[in-house]
Amino acid sequence: MSVEKISVRLKIKTPQLKQQFKKNLRSIAGFNISNGIFSHRIDLLIFELGDEIEKDFEHIHVLRNSGEIDEVFFISDHYDEVVVRQAMRAGAKEFFSQPIEDKEIKGALETLKEKRLSMVGNDSPKNGQIIHVIGSKGGVGATTVAVNLAASLAQKESIQSVALIDMNLLFGDIPLFLNIVPEYNWSEITKNISRLDFTFLNNILCVDNSGLCVIPSPNYLSKQHAAKPEIIEPLLNVMQHMFDYIVIDGGQSLSGISQKILEMSNTVLLVTVLNLPCLLNTNKLLKTFHSEGFPPEQHVKVIANRFMKSSDISLKDAEISLEKKVFWTIPNDYKTTVTALNRGKALTQSAPRKEITKNFRELATKLCHMLEKNKKAPNSQARPEGI
Image (tube, rainbow, N blue to C red; front, side, top):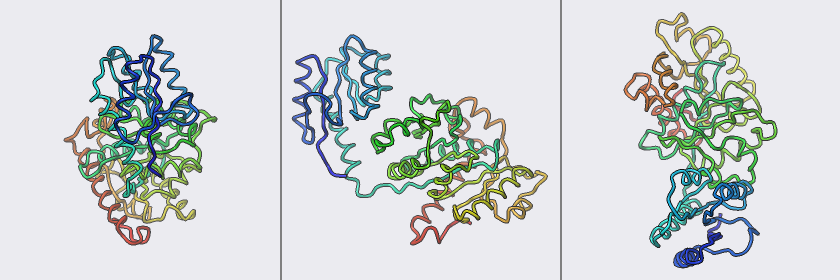
């Protein structure tokens, strides 16, 4: 990716205001003011809102969805919280209310420039680790594990960025778990696959108040913009350069999409509970993985959720049945987990001192240690840790 000037289009009706922005743009190296119509993709549109605000926002949505503009700064003749919220939903990176000081403009432009340079000139891109969480059958708590593991990872000081992807493509529940109302979902990626890059993903990711970045599933089924296997690889490749960890809630499906994720995952957490139907399904999945040749056996970790020491089926019996060690057990605490769900909060926020929350933190720490050690090994596929 080469370093190019940031193209800027000014759509400002007030002459004095337009000259002010031109002066500031020309005072900072790296910007190029474009004239005329949108003949090519514009990196930054600086747009002055008029009297018909709803039409203005609709126009911006059309431009952004078509790929004609990337970033947008809005200008208004006064500050209005409702308008500011609308601007943020329209993808605004800055909102200026008049009168505007030169230092405000320069600060916003410098921030944008630094962001662009960091994306273009980063000689050490992240090598994000993909953790794929799947359930042995419906109702075993795979989404609970995915959400609370991702939230626990995001809380660690050594980790800068964590993403959570909802691959329960038929009515996923992650927005309920985190009390978020996403503006975009999976369909936005499928509609705009040609625009898939750092900037595009930054604009559509939903960020909860802990800093966790989420790609939710659609809230309705649409064949026209359904996620497809050929989208998964480029998406995860981009995300691995953006995030330290990508946690995927894979549901229970073994579709073409999940198979591609399984191929690319650094570790697969297979969630089960210690009852006969779940263990039978877990066994079937492990045998399927073996017959397909992926993921490698050492990458698959069995997680026993809702674990009780007094269970009719002991941990040892389960391991004999599965012919595989259980990697981790999560204690049964229905009341705490349901309360967190009803509040729309991860356990780290809803019940930070509870034993189950501590358990998720310890799981996050163990996975980090394991994955970082594997990453440093000469051949991470051949030298797994933590089996």
